[in-house]
Length: 412
Image 1 (cartoon, rainbow, N blue to C red):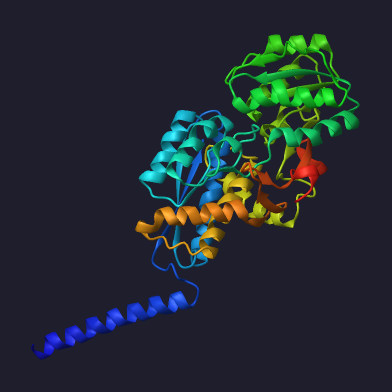
Image 2: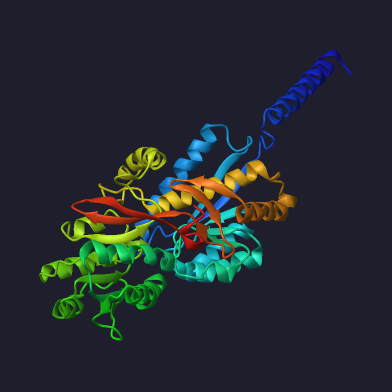
């Protein structure tokens, strides 16, 4: 071997040794996953009826990804979040989940958002043995039917209604209501036809159209006939079970016909757009997070960083605010990252199944600090967490009360 070749060999050897030494030092400094990629999936409806929520979820996840990578990643691994649009179509949700699990090889998934999508996609998560945690589904029993891999970082509407209905009754002196709901949305059907009517009766509130609930279908723009019927019933308050964009259609038509009564519904009413439909109408709904008075310092910091990003994103309203679903999906991914840090996840391709199992066990048995306090998951896969009774009026949300989804209202 000539002198030049020997010199090249020595240089290459030194470079390899330096690289190994740097890797070893990174591992010793808590960067045991240095040089690897941490893959997490997300399913959001960036098109279709819930597009606004899906788009804000996307901005939220990209913000989180940037935060994590700017701080050195997770144990040195670079975070990469694969975000797919399911267009609020349950079959597409299932297809996307399968793609994330089988093709993208993610260790865990955030989403899908809706109860209808979860009913179709979570069984696939069980089949493929990958954790999937919804950021919004609140129809009772959805996670319970999809154990042990299906979770929801939400509180089901039945638990929430037990807090919102008494507040609604006592604050606005409501003794009668009329009920209208979206017949095409799984959560709205459950909330409007069963949950809220049941809790209304338990609280001594008479349903004027009991047995003949008013309905409409997602996408309807003419609800004048339904509003006319509500006006003729002359209730003290109105139950509207629908996602916010459909609910605003109903509220605007009621206002046009001179019906200005307090409205109550489920979590899908929490959106900035609701405040513009009829500012003088009190809107009572439950939320695990909201932007407004007494939302807390941790939430305020989150809003301060995310809101400017949302407001400069094309396709979103200029006055957009972070939603509870943005907070929920941020919490979900943050929980997964904590699982990677604490459970010995290796990110090795041949240990993907073991990594997924470690994350599942961590989510199932652990607890973490969310925006409103301690969060854990119960045996049904639903979050035990604090929630708020929120009042929307005169262009802002304010807190009417607090509750906890744990047994007996405890455990938060």
